[in-house]
Amino acid sequence: MTDLETRVTPPGSATPRRAAPALLGYVAVRALGLLALAGWSAARDKSAYTLLTARWDALWYTRVAELGYGYEVRLPNGDVHSNLAFFPLLPWLERLLHAVTPLSYADAGFVVTLLASLAAAWGVFAVADHVYGRRAGVCAVLVWAVLPVGIVQSMAYSESLFTALAAWSLYAVLTGRWVTAGVLASLAGLTRPVGLAVVAAVWAAAVASFVRDRRAPTADTSPRRGAGTAAARFAPRALGMLLAPLGAAGYVLWVGHHTGKGPLGYFDVQAGWRNGFDGGYAFARFVADKFTSFPSALAGLGLIVGVALLLWLYVVCVRQRQPLAPLVYAGVVLALALCASSYFGSKPRLLLPAFPLLLPLALALARLRTSRSALVVGCLAAASAVYGAWWLNGSGPP
Image (cartoon, rainbow, N blue to C red):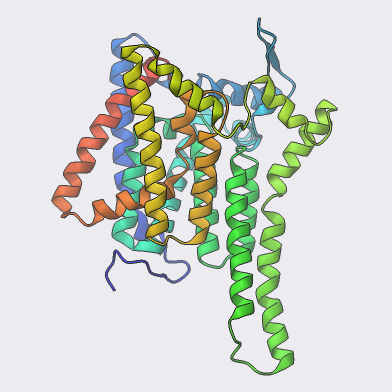
């Protein structure tokens, strides 16, 4: 068996020492991105730090951390943007760090994001290493780091925190730590609405393991010992399944109670932002509208190619027989991102946590010679750094 074949590594193998090359490479890529952003911003007389910590969602999270929930903005068209749309774990961490250090809320958000991005990179490595080996794990982290919207990993947004929790929850599932997987899935559900994807992954893997246990013959013919062994296997998985949805469900129910609109009150809050799930109809219309004129038609064609690439990557993941948990997780993240009815410019960053989609690319990179793979990563890192600097100094991620 080679280092690039699917395999099972012993639980606990994702040690800091084993992950060190991946983490060092990740830090180098992100440092290049921040340097490019600083230089580009200085040339435009802007503050790179402000762009990272005080734009769009970062402002909303900081306001929640400082003032709590209840703030809303009423737009001229009648839409109501409420900060209840933002899940609480990131602002809770910002408030905690602000309380125990001299950092401002914005500074605390930046520190949380930097630490979470490292934890996310380590988690991506752990999952890829467990499934395909160490070299593929390093390449998976580097591919995730050089994504065109990789600069979001360094912003005071919740993507890095969510990806860290999701990746380590998946790793816990893969290594049979069901209670840990459930706790991390619950925390992911307190971070972003897409926490549903982590819950689905935990549930799907647990149900599949129950089915395997029922079909597999037991080596111990003693009824009493066999029943005890079955109960010992059943209890952690059942507890993990029970814990997984508590975070998301708890917050959604609290919002419903807080607004007085019942269990579905959170969906009314999202409707005020014109967010919803329509199966991709609105996104399809958005793409179709691009073909009304020639310059925009090129953008429409690019969007179609991008969606086709994502779907192709998912098919490749299935054909390469990724474990069930990463497949379910990536599939749900992909579906929620592509089928959301608003904020089409946000879709690239909404897909950022779907790192299992990158594993086929990581495998291809891992099969190259080290010198060639380093050249590819270097070129992609430079392009990502320039694009991120240009993007954030322009419209930025809404």
